Image 1: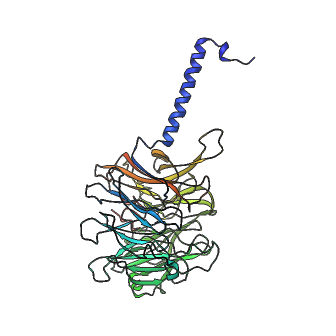
Image 2: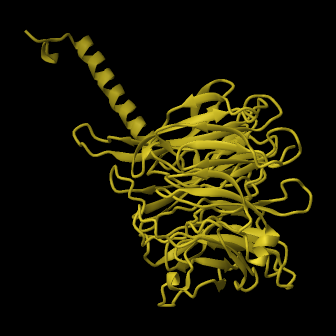
Image 3: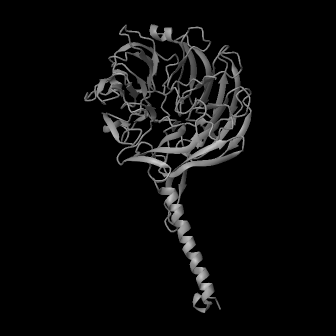
Length: 512
């Protein structure tokens, strides 16, 4: 006969009662760990009708000595929004200002003071010709590349999506640096339709938003890649790295010069790499991998390859291919294996968009391309990894948003998205979580990490959005949450790769 508590001695019933209470407490604690915005998160903001495909970057806008958060946002794709760009007080999360837009602003901000008030302005781009300069202190829009209230479709004027800009020397003699930026990508063209408008590189006045020069890409293909600019050989020549192709269309990675862009003709650009069926979307990183004092180019192609290209000879240093994967994020650069050559970390998506269920990660020796570490964590994300030495052991570690699907209730088949900030420690061969488990999914927003308030401790700014169930419907993001997280980790050396495209937002990894 089965045993019931009514036939048990009182001592055993007390034990079962204690165990039962313990289980309830454990479950309650687990739920709190998963969904509490308290504890290590020192502030959180929540915008219900808004999502993001932009990465936060930080700058002091209100002159209080604490870096503030600026990022792009928006509602449903191709719909106007009053929250296209937001600036948040770095100390409290209070909204400093917000700016409306005709579409999602998916770019990340560039900061540069053109008003002369001592506070940098915000330059940021996005879908359907969104590119604007915003007064950093007041939120006033100084100029828009394409008028916000214009009923004309920007595509009719040959203008498409703007990506992340870079500063170049003054070109229109107004004593202000100007902007170099890529433009392309027509959302109205179906996935496998090769009839796509050619991308272009553009030089735009930072003072008034006027076009100073433009040049069409040599292969006539679309572009989604944010340009990277540097003097590769440190010889005064400004080299420009740009790319073409997309998720379903092949393309090329190129090197040209700023002078050729200014002349409006980049037909002589050097082909650095080619992808036959899928192109180059994520910005490359520049780092010296062979010790010759010249920046080499590290790039991911959508077809699952990570490549290093010699910046002196344009030849291939090494290539690592992972069949059955696609890559939508940029490589992260750091000193992971103890030698003097920077190494590479990349997150790969297993499958073919939109049927991507899982992610896998590789750490590659910067000198040879040898795979030194591998892991398989999380579901789809194209937010890029960032790098810092978390435990101050002299070796860099990687921080990445790892997304998962969990079932909240035993009898409810629906799953919910969660995001966990995960550190990859290659010396100890472990991964561990930083801060709370966050409700929602971080699909496309690279975290920022650094010392935002000057207290010698590391802070992290990250975000999540909610998607439709288990589907990657990034066209309809909602419930944007931005988290400012205090960590116990001391910052004892410069963090060089603490943001999307590095801590200086330019894709360049500089040695000590």
